[in-house]
Length: 78
View (cartoon, rainbow, N blue to C red):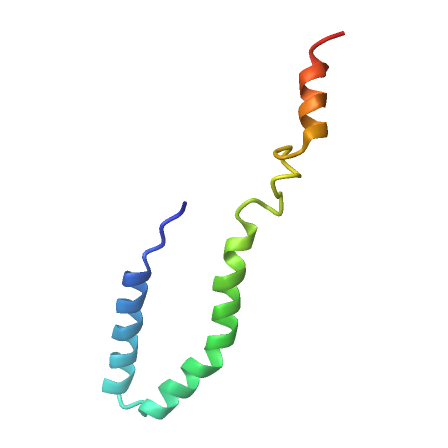
């Protein structure tokens, strides 16, 4: 299982938000930008875990398939 540094991402985001507000960007503008980016970012985060196996489920890899087990066991014999 891959471990992602979510805590580091949260700290970096907090630094960016505080920096933007300190530079004079209104907090409402920062909040509006976060709301606009929330949908695409959630899609990337939610769909990212689906492509770890490149779409190969257990059956595509030959697991949990009795027919594939039979083919493997008899393929060595003639």
